[in-house]
Every structure is written in structure tokens, then in C-alpha cells.
Image (tube, rainbow, N blue to C red; front, side):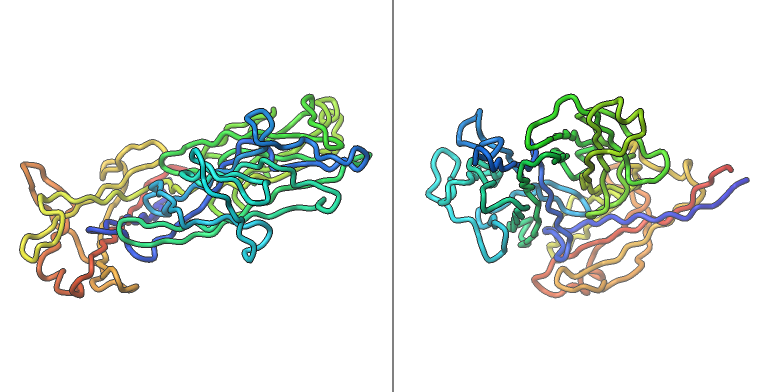
Length: 372
């Protein structure tokens, strides 16, 4: 039988600059395990980190996206790293060759990407816990300043008779441009890497959660549900496949957080008129389309039962819309017919304060017929 499912998607179009209040999302990409062990017998860290290509530890690269159009954003030089406390910014020596080394000799930073590389040992007789790193990203997007704060943990463990540790590395953001992330697992026993272990990757769902087995895993949008610290994949480790087959408990487990910034559907808003900025006289026309971001197919009225559109108009300095539920019309520009279309002329701009820009929020409401 047919079952009407109501759905909604919203897209934004800002004329001249990014709308204030747009969410900025900060993520981190790692290339190695954020882990180091302390050996109380040899009194050394394992593995030892140094400032050469062969000995340097993991590199953590911050990435910034907007929550709606997920455009990669440049991070400004004013951004800062902090070690274990927001009261403890990492202090740097003068840059050289595109990098700068911290005054404590533990880190180096790429001055362009702000990637943080570990070049000194964090594990010691006095530091055998978990360290936390914070990054405060600052920058500008189309005239609007932004600031975002993120953090990650670096695990330190003292080598003991029975110490299993499971760590992962890889990306933690899925966007319209990044449909999969490649993850790597690292299993340690007594501080030593274990290459013959058995690793399984699972979704957060309780049923049909298995993704794959092995030290590497590619995770797509179909395996991640939502955003935030509880969104991602679960990872389990056994000493070998026989242990798993014998239904023994996993010796270690971890969680790799991944946020999916995409929805199943997305509203794409765009300007269709020759005029793209308000000059006080010539109207700006905008249109939109509904796209399935999984298949990249444009959704038409032939695909769904009903589709309606409306628009909310915002002054760039006001939180509430100055015009709500503006209905679309149809127009022809350069011999192309656009439906839906909205004209933003004198009547609409009269609601916008002098010196401010306009943001148009376009909403699609539709119903799909599913046969059960």
C-alpha cells in the first residue's frame, strides 16, 4: 500500500557574504596512532619520536567546514594550539622553511596548514596518563569572522605484563566532497605493536553492525548516522582470528568518531539573473533545486508525490527573518524557464537595513510514495 512520507530540506543563498551565525565545524585528520608507551625498565618511551622523517610521530591536521555548504575554509595564522589546558598555549620559535618548532621541543607546526607533528617524547616517568590537545581555529569567510574550538586525546600507557591498547587514525568528517574516510587500526601489547591481531569494524547500530575485518577500513556515509561525539564506528581487537572464533572477549576496543555532515537531500540555491548584487534598482532573481546527495540526482516532481517551496528572507545582522514564507513564481531568463524562482527587488530590499546584506533561506517540503 502507499504511504506518504513527509520530508524537508533547506538551502541557503547569501548575497555578497556568509550569513552570520552559520555553524563552523572543526575536525582532525591523523596519519598515525596517537599513542606512546613508557617502559619503566629501560626508562624510555616506545616508540621514540624525533624530528626526522623516519622518527617523527603522528601528524594531526585540522580541517574546517561550514555546516550547510561544507566548503573547506582557510584557517588564519591567528589560530592556536593548546597542550592539556586552554590556559597553556604552545609557544613557538621563529618559523623556518614553512615550519616552526615548539620551545619545549615536542612539536612542530606547518605554518600554512597548522598541522601539528609530534617530534619529541610525551611519555615519561612523570607522564603516563592521557594528554589532551586543543585547537582554536580562527579565520574569515566572505567578510564574516569565525572561531571554532576542537580537541583530541593522546594516549600514554606504562608497559605492564598485560596491557592491550587499540588506537585508530584517519578522518572524522564526511561531507559532500568527502564521501568516505580511510581508517587504520593500531594494536599494541605491552607497548609493542601487534601486526597479527584480528580487528573488526562495526557501526553504532546493534543489529547488522559488521562493516569489515582487518587493520584498515573504508567507511562511507551509509555506515555513519548523524553528527557529534556519539556518531562513528566501533572497533574491536583479538590477539588472533582463532580467539574471535572461540567467542573469546575482545582484548581491546575503541571508538572512532565520524560526523556525517550531509543529509539524504540537499537544496541547492543559486542566482539566475545577470544582477548578482543589489544596486538599488535591478532585481536579483534566485532559483533552487532539490538534489539527492547520495546519488547526486536532481529530484523532480516525477519522482515524488508533492513538492512545495517557500523562502525566508534575512537581514544579515538579524536572527529572525524579515520576510517569512515568501512563495515562488516562474520566470524565464536567457530563454531558460525557472520554476521555482524568487524576485528580490525593491519591496524585499526595503526590509533590509542600509549597509546590510540579504540571506535567502529556501525550504523544500515534499512527500514520497513508498510501497509496503
